[in-house]
Amino acid sequence: MKALKNILDGPPFHVRPRLQQFVESTHIERVPATRTSAQNRALHLFFKLLATELNDGGHTVQLVIKQKLDVDWTEQLIKEILWRPAQIAVLGKTSTKDLSKSSDLERIYDHLNRHIGEKFGVHVPFPNDELKHLENNQGYKTGGKLSDPYPEYSGPPTI
Image (cartoon, rainbow, N blue to C red; front, top):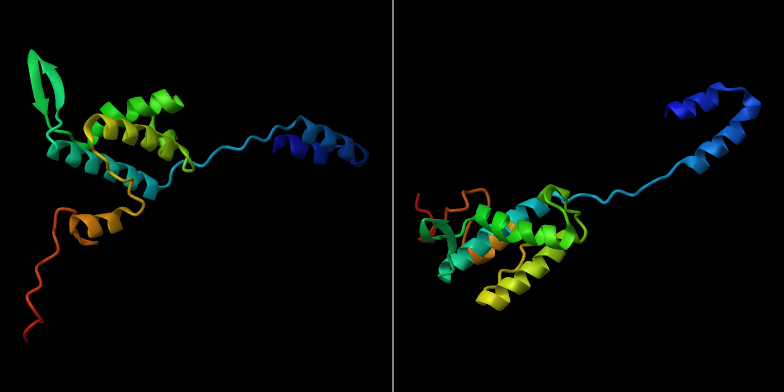
């Protein structure tokens, strides 16, 4: 902006050549948009769903503490042990905050889903709409805690 102000503040007969020089020397770079908050929620829901599926299938994390110890999967373990190493290997990006919203999530998911499916026979579809997914597949209600199931229908209310 300062360069443009200097051009405009100069003599009127120098504006056009100086402006042309400025335009020719300027490099515009397109920065890809980062993931949206909805994509972030879907990503973390995927971590949680995959952790549940792996735990239900008896596939535990083995941490070494003098002996091997079987530990159940958590959303955070999915992110740090499975997702992040795949992300670094495929894209060279260390933070999930740096993922572009167009294709990065899909590329990492495809690699990870293929690997987990081939090794353990576990497949979790990537949630497109996390609340709709929970309502349709897990019996949760929008607006409540994710652990609150829908109440049983007991007929119309009595007054």
